Amino acid sequence: MNKFYITTPIYYPSGRFHIGTAYTTVLADSMKRYHKLKGEDTFLLTGTDEHGQKIGEKAAEQGKTPQEYVDEMAAYAKELWAKMKIDYDYFIRTTDEKHVKVVQKIFDRFMEQGDIYKGEYEGWYCVPCESYFTETQLVDGKCPDCGREVKLMKEEAYFFNMKKYADRLLKYYDEHPDFVKPEYRKNEMINNFIKPGLEDLCVTRTTFDWGIKVLKDPKHVVYVWLDALTNYLTALGYGSEDDSLFKKYWPADLQIVGKDIARFHLIYWPIFLMALDLPLPKTILVHNWITMKDGKMSKSKGNVIYPEDLVERYGLDSVRYFLLREMPVSQDGIFSPKSFVERYNFDLCNDLSNLLNRTVSMVNKYFSGNVPKYNGTPNEVDKELEETCAKQIKAFEEKWENYEIANGLQEIWTLISRTNKYIDETMPWVLAKEENKEKLESVMYHLIESLREIAILIKPFMNDTADNILRQIGVRDEKFMNWDSLKQYDALKDIKVIEKGEPIFMRLKPEEEIEYIKNLMKK
Ligand code: MSP
Image (tube, rainbow, N blue to C red):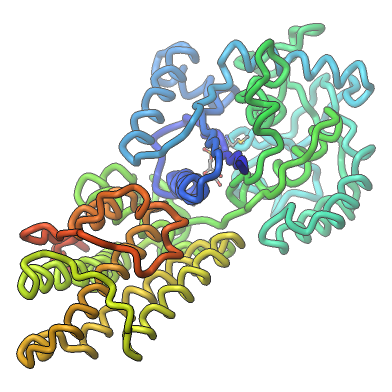
């Protein structure tokens, strides 16, 4: 059995998570569910990144100890992921003792190997990003990552010898075209950071103490990124007594990260792994951001939207659908109340929900709910629908295997539209009037079968809706719910749809709901 190890970034618990943050996790969860449905042995990791100056300051602001603060925030994160039905297999916290010990061991090993050396650091430091920058890296004298003020700071520090690995990394990029997706991100790393000369990385801090202490020099704490990146290993028990998960799942098959943390994952992370003599992940997927019409989401602009608020009013699956459908991965996607309501009304209500409703009510009306068997002599129109199903399944798979997520969803909606059109073309009400039983049976079979395939296709990202569709059309047998069963078009037998179809999505009143979402943003 193929294994598939997939990771999200571990989140800074510095406040509530907005829909942008939720995007990465929903994407990772959907990928995991897709591979699981295909029968692979999947493992999804997520967690919280709990050390660093920013967290220490946040806790102090609230009159809490850092540990109290991160305990509360980790509980909040778990609660949110439960609401969003994130099917993770392990939740790592960088304050976990198991993680702390291994980070200390790794640090010692790097020192012994000569990868880490002691020196003095002077540079422009961005407190929110916890990153030092050189003069040339600054943009208009400000932090190149977040655009905020930086201050000149000097401290005794340990450095990781990145330069030593630069050529090896370039060679690795070159020989592994799947390592970075989309490819242009790799070129950005080469042109912006590696070719101009890779700087050694400062990997300790002495200006605060909320972090993992260097065992041999405890006034230093390990730089949050060295601490955080290793979570992908420690979560599997790497370096501990029980490393069976590590042996089974490493290297990761897919690591998903946002564009702001690409540099850490595409340069430092592979170099740390090379220094540890470990294989590198198969693919690191860098996604762009969800932004608002007026730019980045921020509390000061009053344009932040939180996933749980949307889920509470519109249900989980519409939010998951929207996030994946509106974000092209390799470009920024825009959230607007109007686009959310439109996607809901057009894609989910008009296209999907109505298709199910019309079909269930026709099978009830014409065949007392009993779905006719496949008759073995499909006509031209039936055959065309069968072919469209097969074609769209293939197109969806190709897109998803290449991490073109939104395009993959579009392929499913092409099938949904085609199936709706099939009803208009075959006009079952006319067939009923003409008492053309044979043709009517074939049409009903084809509609139910297409809906079954659509349900399986949407299962990775809209699990509850998929189950609801399967229940309404009467598919109970597990063997007709897995990915493999998509190959069979003619096998459904002895199934009965529910007596009265229930709409899976009800039309929203656009103006009211746009106003409602705008108010959520102001809240
Ligand atoms: N703690 C680090 C990750 C360490 S991984 C070893 C971190 N945390 S974060 O909470 O700030 O961000 C988590 C993820 O959310 C990142 O991948 C980031 O890119 C993503 N997003 C934050 N805002 C986003 C949007 N507006 N849109 C999409 N993703 C966004 O970075």
